[in-house]
Image 1 (spheres, one colour):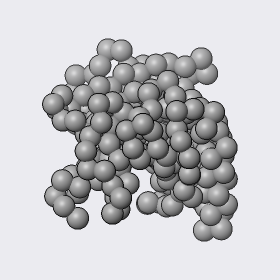
Image 2 (image 1 turned 135 degrees about the horizontal axis):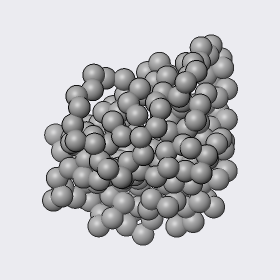
Image 3 (image 1 turned 120 degrees about the vertical axis):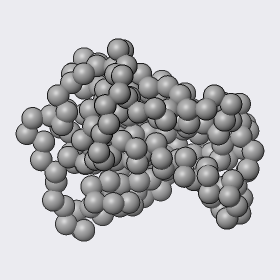
Image 4 (image 1 turned 90 degrees about the vertical axis):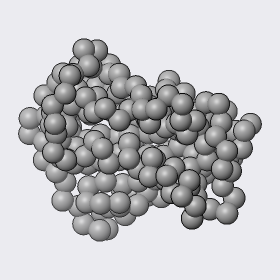
Length: 213
């Protein structure tokens, strides 16, 4: 694996890893990000058996596969993987598809209640993203838009819709300005824009059936 490929893989996971339960250093809070109680009062991490996790992963795969073609009509031949457990309380999967520029994917990180302890505002106080904006939704939950990395001249971009749900779970859905699937068919070249815009990512991130509970 080349250093460049490794860097892109690291970038894809850095967006997720940066918002997990890690020590938080205060910085200037973005004024346009809603400040809500987080985790919500009464948040209880689930205690699923391996069999239950497998069932949940299968249900997430099927639902994402069912809704993706309608939400992202520009995607050709979308195929959704079964999410896998990347660490306790978090499942990670993707939908691979083609657009005019070539193969790409949308990735999903499903975080169970109690996994992410930083509030939406604290998440946006990080200094390693180019954009972090939040919207308070009608039900009181918060939807963030994040673009990584911070450097404006980096052509390898990741756009993430991140939904902080009222039960304490967080669903993150990301699109890329490149092919994030690392195999011998990977296109090493960046594209002008991410393949899936925020308005489509938002539909997936806020889908109540695309959540790990």
